[in-house]
Image 1 (cartoon, rainbow, N blue to C red):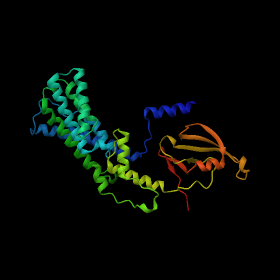
Image 2 (image 1 turned 90 degrees about the vertical axis):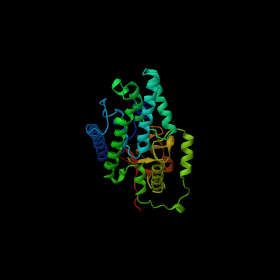
Image 3 (image 1 turned 135 degrees about the vertical axis):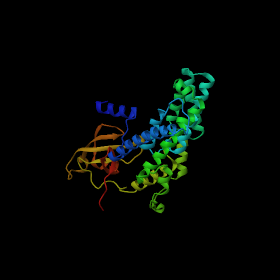
Image 4 (image 1 turned 180 degrees about the vertical axis):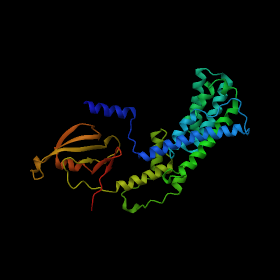
Length: 326
């Protein structure tokens, strides 16, 4: 195993994945997080200062709201970011944390129990929101200022924080058509995608994905509507350039178009002259990504042509098809 292949495998193992979002999207997400938390502090303070709600403990913002801001403004279409997940996750976890503290105290075992029960409750109530676990933990281990509030802590600051950050997310993301929040709004007002089912050899359906996700038996952070949109876009891309490349050229990069562990990207490092005899017409290739990462090989040009489904290029750290001119 060479060094490049070692680091390639290490990157996959630790989950250092490609992020194809634009610089503008990253900046928008960061700005949204700043505005969201700033508004949570400001509006919660105004409510308390106006005497609308009593808050003797002086707690304005729960720390887990920072994690919620990451989801709401960096992943607004994720299943973990939707309103019921945010509200239910925080409030239900808060109830569990307070109850555990009142019944058993604040030992490390009870802290673990509160988080574990919160995870189970969020699963069964369909409101998984990772920051909710932090809310449950904060209630148990947060000290006297939080413990003395008891169930009042659910109203101030938890409920106030949740309402404010959801409202900010709704308004902020509305300024960007591709970031409508909640995710259902983005799907509802999106222009229908032109589909020609009769031209397709087979159609993957919502039921197919539901069955596959059930077999996977692991939580997937995408809404059913978002999954359907992604599926349709993937189908349209699959229908482009479905034939093998016209030529296999030195320096060009090709994909076998497969999925999962069979997917592979190869670049032609060197090749015999085009007019070589068939049995001597060979190419040397290097695997750039996927199956056989960073290995090199040699084969007949005809064999490589059968392997290659289409030519690709790298854009924003993603491998994309090269459009073939008709």
